[in-house]
Image 1: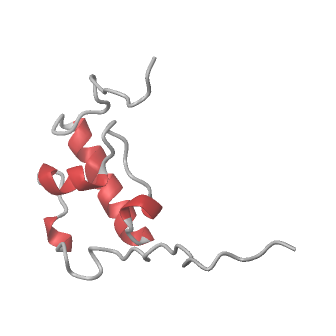
Image 2: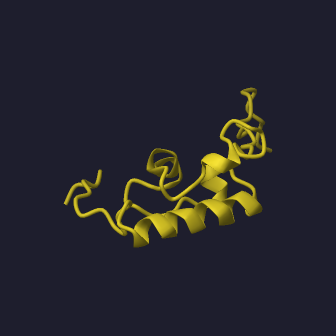
Length: 89
């Protein structure tokens, strides 16, 4: 039979909603505040998922709506033109 390793098991720290905890105020999430919205966008310009950003469903809808508004007004890009990948071609 296979023996178990004596090392500790890895566990991921549970992410919490930054808006529910009060770390970021809900009134600060507007399409005009691009600096805060950039925290919820990947380096390629895509909206981060709930699992990656740690937001609850209510606040994920709020943030994604404001990101879409900022894109329509051209405060945020729809896609990033230059992206340097880590893969070697």
